[in-house]
Amino acid sequence: MLGAILALVANAVAVIAVATVLPNQVSFGSVGGVALFALIVGLLNALLRPIVRLLTAPIGCVTLGLFGIVINGLMFWLAAQLRPDWVNATFLGATITALAAGLLSSLFGALTSDRRERH
Image 1 (tube, helix red, strand yellow):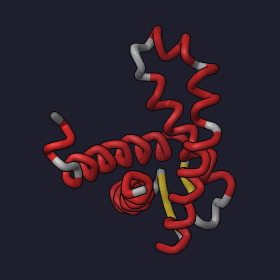
Image 2 (cartoon, one colour; image 1 turned 45 degrees about the horizontal axis):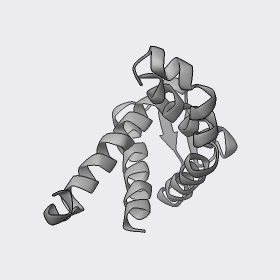
Image 3 (tube, one colour; image 1 turned 60 degrees about the vertical axis):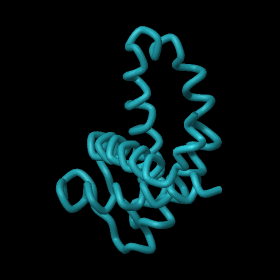
Image 4 (cartoon, one colour; image 1 turned 180 degrees about the vertical axis):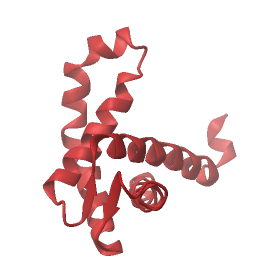
């Protein structure tokens, strides 16, 4: 449960951060819209991402997993297309946002994990 909440927070923070740094690639209407966008991304990642990853597994093997970045960007872009008044992003902006969200999620996970669980 904590992991899901941290992922939603990471997604929201990533959208705001990338929109601040790259306003031509990503923009958002309100912080509440960003929170709902993060929820939509979470649902898409839970429902569609496993299917897409299965279908694109051969490409993932050839690119040594780097195609996963494109899949993450696709999930963010698709969520932005569902509600463009909440978050508007180009595909490049969505991919950069997905990378930032992944990095933030990893950072949050490392900061909140119990060291005893690692051994």
